[in-house]
Length: 263
Image (cartoon, rainbow, N blue to C red):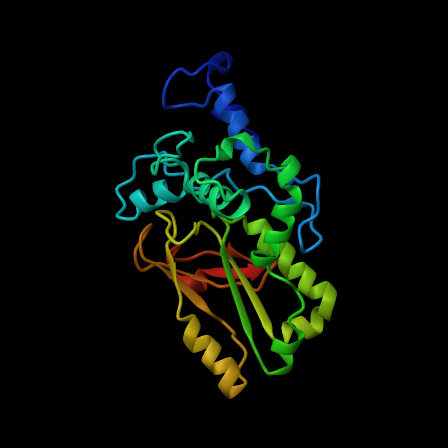
């Protein structure tokens, strides 16, 4: 995304209607992958950045009942520190607790002193613990027992990167092949949806019925529709099989049938 239109004059912090160079640099950093100098248990050496441009970061004033939750899960209302304030970005609070109680096992440890890309003496410990967190692609036993997997991720999630789920889905395709993956996995990416809550498009969907139909009756999900409960309550959008996305074709913008899933 071109950030130039958002830039304050001369890059200075001149108010709430534009972004300073420092603020733009922060957003660029969030959007950029974290590259580890060691391997995680899955073999990966990076974690993708977040689709931060256009996402609701909880820094705007919106008349939405979910905005406090969005702010809590996104940028929070105070910067990270040691000890970590509960009002800091949620990812900072979560990481702080993980480093203190899982990695170093020192409750007073300053989590901000660790470089996540190059954690030094904590690299092996971090790699070992990642086996408890990473999602492996060897789900052969699950598939052979007739298991079905529905993956849903919002494109505006700033807590868990949507790109990470995209990578996981592609790794499933590499392991099992495109045709075989389609026989037991569906991945839907929802524009505007954040992590657990979104003031833009707070998606709801009867996934349990879709899963029940697929597992118990052999009817794979087709023509699934999601409903917004916050941005424009009641509006609908089609759930598109990744990498397809819903393109507006004309008609009522609040109705799913006005959109077509395209690549």
